[in-house]
Image 1 (cartoon, one colour):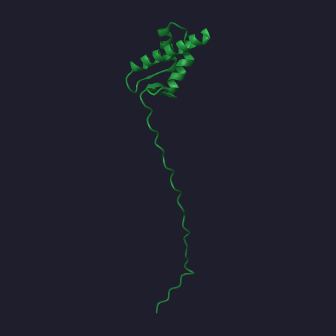
Image 2 (cartoon, rainbow, N blue to C red):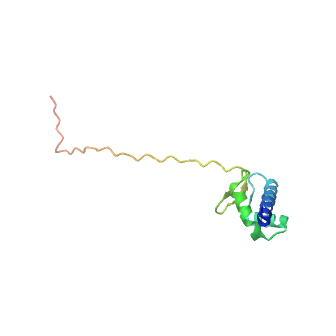
Image 3 (cartoon, rainbow, N blue to C red):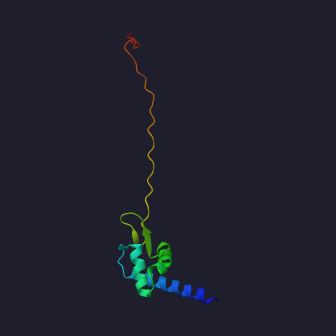
Length: 111
């Protein structure tokens, strides 16, 4: 096997294990920004963050112990993604035709 490939396989395994360790130390529902997770992993491995960013990103998006959420309250969140509730579409009201009877048309037969 090529030495460069072997080195990358070892680095990726170490990055995954370090990311797993950081996630394990978190409480359920706690979140961390992806860039902060990459910094923590980089400090653990004594590598620059740009070298472990791809491995950390892949770990975060494909992990079973954490999930990634976007937006203001986004980041890497420990736990299982909550089930999204599917809202049922409301049925449209069907208007029934109404007949308007005027006084001229109204005939009353009293017998």
